[in-house]
Image (cartoon, rainbow, N blue to C red):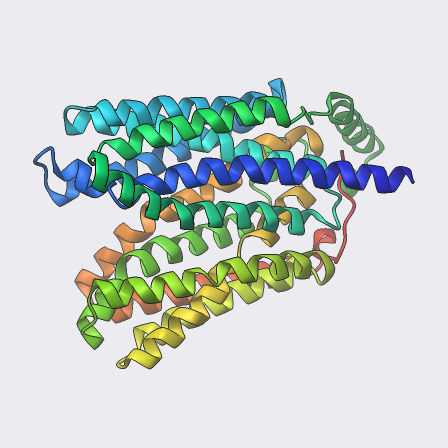
Length: 418
């Protein structure tokens, strides 16, 4: 009976967190269709317009690790509530911006708020889930995230059309404050200080006995430089590189140049294949918990890479659509297993900061992917650059699979300290 009650409480916290995630991401999605047009009103070129997206990602990269440290020291609620408040300040400030530089500053603030919330949400999921259900919990939260992102742009377009390009930023600010209030009253604190202290003491005792395997890493630096984490970081970086550089940058250009498609056709394919994520996340989460993290990560990387290669060689609409479907199966299943693997290898007292490091690896891929693959396409061709991106993401998944074959976390269900 006790186990049933605890499971019910865990499920309740999960769905409350998903509600907050949906509100936050729907808000951020609202500005996506108008951001570039809004920045263009300040009379700047395309490079400066692009910076409004890049500076948001740079802020996340900088703030991820401090957010994890704060979560470990002061609790999860601090950043789950504080993150949306910071986002609200940044978004409302963006709506009042009177030049491009002011807009960039406020976009940085909004990005920092996003990093606080998303880091806190991931740590919170690890706190409330058992090892055998963690991937499913992560998948459920990412489903809420994807739904919010999908619904936001339509609302943003309607708001901008009726009240002007600055109006969506104010709507997002209000939405973020709603999310902060929701989190404040509905999400209980999950930081287990006693569990963290016990995790430290167990590691110290094992180290004193000379039991290296039981002691685990003695510091965050040692864990961050360990083979399992470095290989996982490489997987995360290449997956996000594929999303931002291959799919977000090169693929529309390939469709335009190779098969003569315009924005309408490209947007329709992206919408339909993007919706696959809503159907792949939950099966991916269950597979990760029941079959093993390694197998799901291998599937994700290989399919993402294969899809990129198919699109790179496509000369017909059918091949382009097929490649998009294959790639979406890869990128759409790539979320739950890596996040669960981080939890598997991380002691409770290092949880927050390692989540921050893991998220930073993905943000590096988002920032560098479009630039590096775009540069490579200028030197060679779009098809070659896409092929390189596909090979890199598949190779990273294969290296992770082989490199962690004997790691305890490679099993179907692993015990997690704390």
